Image (cartoon, rainbow, N blue to C red):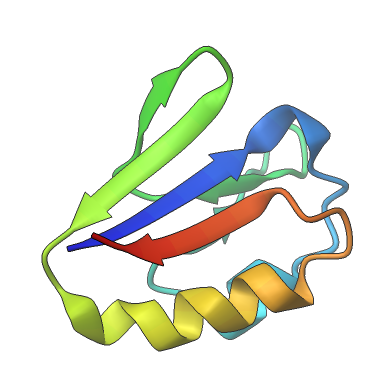
Length: 76
């Protein structure tokens, strides 16, 4: 299982995550920050748990590209 976490409040809207993993991330038209699609929010952390291990590599690319380091990706 792949677990992706996003600290959305710290997002600067650079769009790198969307470029790397467009199926998981999208830019909000309201505030210009990224949205982790299909995620649940708890205390400012947005988390997506997926059984599709194929998304791991692109999400790691998004994590590495993020200049403010607000994305974490791991396999459980």
